[in-house]
Each structure stands twice: as C-alpha cells, then as structure tokens.
Image 1 (cartoon, rainbow, N blue to C red):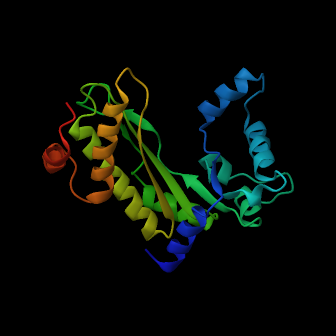
Image 2 (cartoon, rainbow, N blue to C red):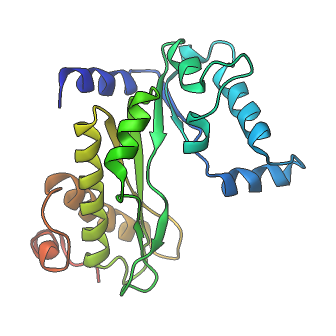
Length: 225
C-alpha cells in the first residue's frame, strides 16, 4: 500500500471519529421514504443527502462518507459536486462499488456479492470524481449447516480481488465480510463462523476459492457443520 493510501486509511480510523454510511440503494432509500410519506425522486434523494453532508459541525465527528453511485454524480443546490462538498470540510468521500448479494449457484440459501465485472474502470472513474476509499460487503448466512466452505471461499476471493483493484486505482478498500446475526443459532455458533470467515478473508486472501481451498481452515478451526 502506498504512503497516500496509508494516510487515508489512518484518517478513516481516527480516534473519536466515524464513517457515515449514506450508500443506500435507490430501492432501499425509497422504502425508508415511503414510511415517512416522502416521494422518492432523484431530487429528493439528493436533497436528503445534501442535508446530511452539510450538517453544522459534521467534520468534528465524521472522517469519511460512503456514497452511492447516484449520489457521487450529483451536485449540491449551489452546483458543487457532493464529493467536493465533503472534501472541502476535510471529510473523505467514499463509494459503494458492489452490486449486491445474489443467490450463489449450487448453494441453496447462500449468496455471493457481485460487481467485479468492469470494476477497474468504475474505480478509476470514481477516483477522478473525488472518491478516496471504497466499500464492498459480503453476506454470510448462518444456521446449523450454513455457511458452506464454497460460499465463504467464493466471497473471500471476491473481496480479495476487489481490494487489490482498489489499491491499484489508489482507493483504500473497506473489506466487509458480514456474518448475519439473524437466525435461531446460538451466539457460540456465530462466533465459530465469524472466526473461520475472518481467517479465510484476511489470512489467505488471494488463494483460489472453493471447498478444497478451505480444507486447511476447517481442519484448524473446525468444520462449519
């Protein structure tokens, strides 16, 4: 990682500061607006996010803001790109780059996060618009059987490819392997799965995905089943 990327990473985790996630997709934000009786339009979504980004004193508490594709292309009411609205306050603009979790073929009940196709060019474009870090979220479902080693391996490999591409394009990658809390399983089961997922994602990020690639992790930490 370059010194510039190291500096951005350190800035994002500054003590007493946080990262604002304003990267809800259009369907998700529309659902939230619907509950409040607000019409979801490109303009209303822009106005809502501009309100968040210009709140007085925001820079005292926020170091970075994760934007959504629609938002990073938008401008404030005075014509300033929203990414610049943030950077002028010393807040780092970021961007969500995955395209969501989709059913993983051959693994019922499990998902793979997509968005690698064309990612290099998208990252280059986002960087030119002011983004300095990115986010990619993998979703791991848990029960007495899930997740499968194939699912964990596939998502870990996608996260690694995403992270490598981000660094290539001078963006700090936020790597988010989210083990869902939903379900009737015990907390010990969640801890077990979380340990194996983190080991797979961060200790051996560039090894090929798949069941065979997970054998050593399962031997060391215990099988998922």
